[in-house]
Image 1 (cartoon, rainbow, N blue to C red):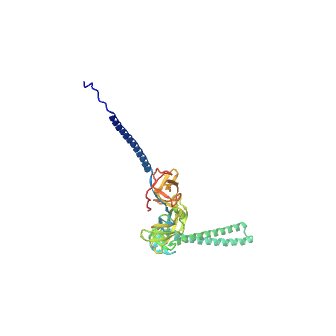
Image 2 (tube, helix red, strand yellow):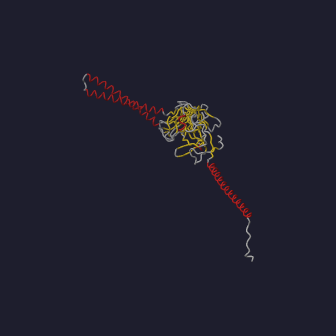
Image 3 (tube, helix red, strand yellow):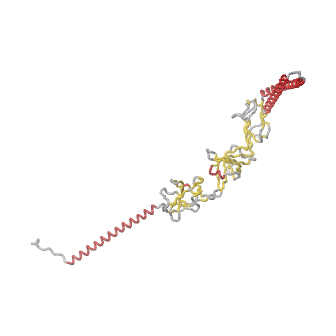
Length: 390
């Protein structure tokens, strides 16, 4: 009987209650769905903005340095005597004695050594004897020529015989002149037995001794003495090509020597080669420094500090600001629009950590230091705190 009993049906009040509850759940579900979608959209937009912001490179900028009115260029140089010459023998023999040694001051024409020349002495005696014979023959030929001319005037001899005697007289005169020249040559060689100083200076080397065999001529290692004038010194320096146009006679130069710490010696640039070495691309210049006190020595190593006028129209930027691309050497700057602008430049001298820019950048531009490889012309950038100038 219980199975056939009818089930009770809910009343209208319960239906209304269930409907309100379901509607509430639906509204809540819709609200949650809308909120979730809106939240995801907002997060996605925020992430896109943050990604875009992070994609903008942060750069460090600084203004280029103006070129100084003058700059110092330090170059190595070799010190040489103002005048220096090796002394060779002009005649052969044996060294009889020497009168000057290294470090001795000498005057022009002062006797430095004497050479024994027995062979030259004998040749001179023979030449003088030949000269006497030639003179006698010439005198006889002249007298004979005069006599035969007188006989020819009286037609006592033929014209042919008179001409023969005149030719003999002329030949004898030529032989006499030759003998005289030979005697003069040997007398000059005799004079070379005395080795004298060619100029005022100091003996810097003596390469011979008493009894040494002396061979005439200029060959390597055959110099008897070396004399140098050290009252004034020359310094030859090779200036790099970028500095050559401004390296002119008259600029100020200070010399520094390791053996004189803390002391500078003023020098004068007196001349330049006015042509570059095609191999080294350098300009040879000559400095002169007074050395009357004898403090400096030829052969020393010196550092020359040149004071070269600067370039007022150029600026200097760090080497890390350079960009090497297909368009050539460029530098990136930041304008008032906070965008990068790539500029082609003309490079001047390279100072290692910085370079000279002749055109393309001014002293008022904001130059980007260490620009990223992805930097493009017109791209937005963020400026970090300025780099402090060293």
